Image (cartoon, rainbow, N blue to C red):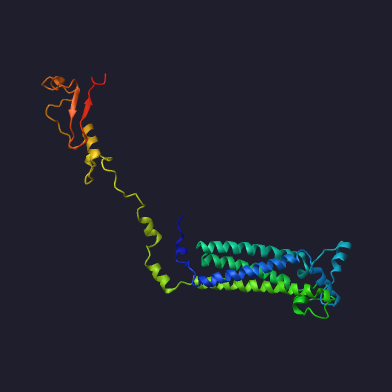
Length: 310
């Protein structure tokens, strides 16, 4: 597979590989913690209770409005911070993040996790976790009498009084979910910045590019491997191929078949079907067999004439 020319100039080595390994370890801890917190909150461990608690204090809308909407056949609108979709979304992105972490680790070990790939992957992770932050901090304006223009109360307020004591732990867990989402965004942003730094070519990288083989156009003009390889001696014209030394076996076969300049008639040798002036095959004394000796040491060989094979 030929690498595109515009990718050949992109650096493929990390400037700080040890920092990347440290970030992998930190990401593993944070991702596992996020998956645990998001999984505990799913599907509705404390979301509706915190919603009701805020309504009791007049900090947000009342969750009973959903029941009234269903009863009166009106459109149902869940405020984004209290929607079940937000909880499911957090669980899904945590699972995807853990899977991507395993893939990134394997690719880094096999030297396939280039800075360019890292920049693309972590840019996508920043985007999906930014959506999670937006969902958790979205306003709740569904109740005109009790609007919530900013983030939910469990983010902006303390989990102490006047909050009910039995909801203190749930309030802390909700704060932890939001905090760990922020940490993951910060971590992926660090990944992204390190990827951009590694993608910036250094002086040594530019020097190595200038000393490489020229462009693709020149490389395409170069012959492919084995296209200019010399032919096997004796296969293209036998001994007539100029400048190609024949092998001894080739010379022997060419001599037997009568090819080449080295063919010479030996004195007293008469081949079948070639009756000379001296009486044809009568003078050979071998009963139709001709004794042949080559100019190379391959032993004594005989040629069986037409009468010898009968």
